Length: 69
Image (tube, rainbow, N blue to C red; front, side):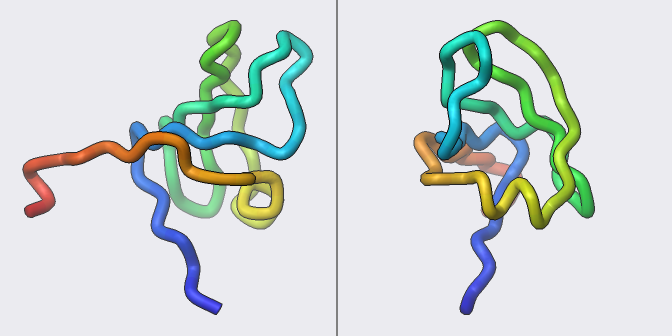
């Protein structure tokens, strides 16, 4: 099974909602742990990679970084 490549700035939809009611998060850090920011209330949390990959439902928006082309 191929691993999905997540990039900083991607917007993801999680399986469960945050207590503020939003289910969309912006990725602010990648690596062994993911830094994600809630788009509803602005809360920033760190999540271990296995837990993050299990909790993500879909990628809503991708960043298109011209420096990577």
